Amino acid sequence: MNGPMKNTFFDIAMGQASRLAGKPGRILALLAKLGAKINRGHWSPLQRQMIKDKFMVLGRMAKAYALGRYRAIPWKTMLILLAAVIYFINPLDLIPDLIPLMGFTDDFAILLWVYNAIGTEVDKFLEWEQSQAIPV
Image (cartoon, helix red, strand yellow):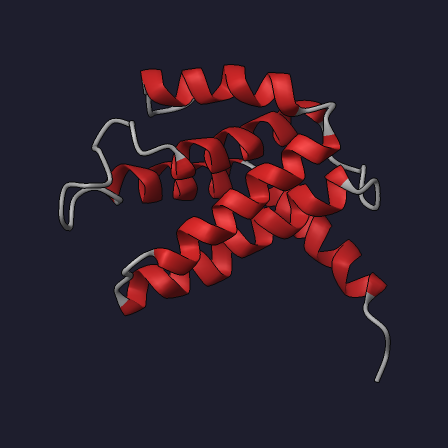
């Protein structure tokens, strides 16, 4: 992983993501796991807002890519996005999620880093998504 963070577990997630990139069904299964983890989490109000604002956008972006609806995203960006989801749903990471209050700290650090790293692509996706909305 490039950037200020070096994390062996994220590097492993990148390897796993590279094996998923061409498999829409597996990407959708991964997104289902993401939704399940988000729904069963005990989040603080700040974490819940972060998940809503960040992971849901990343999840919609990955889903649109997997379904072939949105392909205007570089392949490497898609790998980073998928790796972030894999990292988040994997209970064995830098700080295990079972450790109260601390377990999700590294997950959110990775989320914020990835979201910021691919921010331009997220903005493009949000513009595309808005253009697809049916006018009321």
